[in-house]
Amino acid sequence: MYYPYSRGGASTFEVMLYIALALAVAATVAICLFILPKSKANHSNVYIAKAHDIVNFKSLLIDKLIKVLYIFSTCFTVLFAIFELFAGLPFLWFLILLIGGPILIRLLYESFMLFVLLTQNVIEINRKLGGSPAEPEVPAVPRMIFCTQCGTQFDASQGVCPNCGTKL
Image 1 (cartoon, helix red, strand yellow):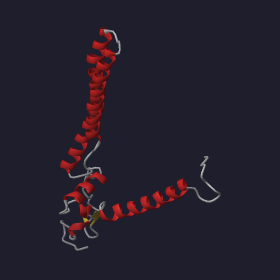
Image 2 (cartoon, one colour):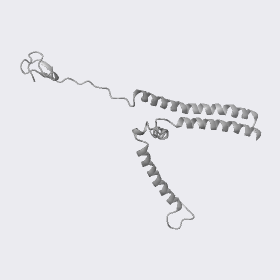
Image 3 (tube, helix red, strand yellow):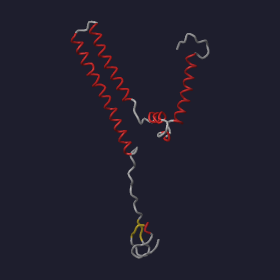
């Protein structure tokens, strides 16, 4: 890349890049030590608890972002249609843009929200079930042995032959 004020040493861009990299590493270490641990989930400070939820993806930000983008794009489409009407857009195209634009935008954003809501519901189900699915408990199979005196087969955990009373 060409930087016009570079004189053989490190350019201002490179210095700022290294400083940003060092600060990002320091911030990452600080967040991993002071916000990420499970002990910070129920912290008395509301901001630390909220930051813990965000860093651990317990609450999603994308649904709020999608809502803001939906409102912005709908307002933009309506205003654009009005401005284009004054700029000479035919009235039929104005109506199509004014009515059809927000409807099309709504359908598009609803399709995005379906995936977000599905993800939120899965997170809520996991939270109600207590986290990750537990492994099914497999019952222990008894170790069967034969009595040395009478030959009766019995469970070794009993310790005594049920037929003749011989101890293991």
